[in-house]
Image: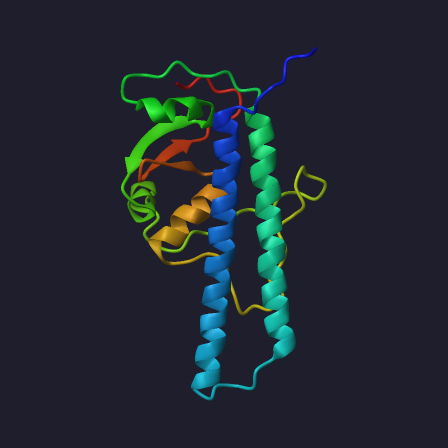
Length: 188
C-alpha cells in the first residue's frame, strides 16, 4: 500500500497566511468604501449612484481574486526553490519559510514592517501584467471612486504582501517578513 503523504506544514501555513491577508485586504477595502458612501449619505452628499457602488464592490472582489491567483502562482513557482541553510539570525520557527526569500526580521506589527519597507505613504500602483501573462491582468477601476492603495501603514504592509514585495507569516504574535528572491539569484 502506498505511503500516505501529509501536506508540508510550512506550505499549509503559507496558504493559510495568504488567505488571511486576502480576506483582511478585501474586508478593509470594503469597509473603506462603505465608510465613504455612508459619510456621503449622512452628510447629505450627492445623489447615491447605486450602479457606481455596485461597480466599486465588483472591482474589489475581482481585484481580490486577481491577487489570490497571483499569490497562488508565486507559491507554485517557489515550490522548486531549494531550501536555504539558515543563518543564526533566523529564529527557529521562521526557518521552514526560508524558501520564500531572504529573512528580513520579526516585527511587532504590520505598521512597523511598513515603516521598515519605507512605505510611509500610499503604495504606488503596481505595473499591470502583460496580456497573456500567467495571471489575469488586474481589473480596471472603472468607477474612479475607490483605490485599493491606502495611506495607512497596515494597508501598506498588506499591499506589499499582495504585490509580492514581501511575504509575511505571523508566528507567536510577531510578523516575520521575507523579501522574495529575484529569479536565478543565489542570495542567502
